[in-house]
Image 1: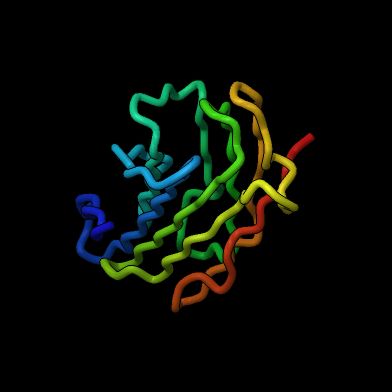
Image 2: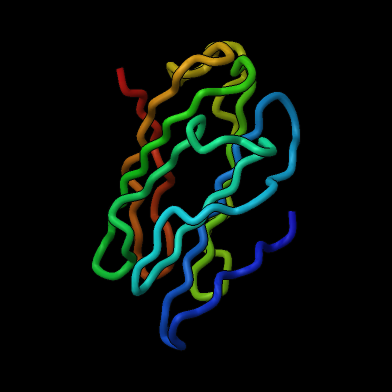
Amino acid sequence: MGAPSQPAARSGHRNMFLLVMILSVCGFTVAEERHLLCSSDDVDILYSNCSRGLPTKDFFFTVEPCALKGNRKWRGTLFWIPRADLTILRAHVNIWSKGFESVKWKGTLCEGVDDGYTFCGALKGGRIHSCCKSIRWSSQGADSLPELHNHH
């Protein structure tokens, strides 16, 4: 996957930060379009997913606070109604800061056997409501990757 295009800068000194999250169910697919999560004076956060024409009511993702300056921890929330059984689920996270890719992470969250997340094995049409926490930042980028926790 090539480098994503960067959003237009609002000022020359603005930190550019791009979060691209790709969820892939049962094989490799390509992200179709980017959606703006939030925008502030120092950050634009966008995401993409791999399901063409996915209605917003079926997929919702937030990041708080929507600021880079003075924030070392972020929290994300995911609400999703999958269109297929979650036997295999892969996530790709690319984080861009000041025009450079600072973090590139790929991982398999669900493999179909002895999965560590309660949403693994969810059936098509079921509801997933999870949160990510412990995203910590330093001047060099991410110190740790997010941890996922399922809401009950």
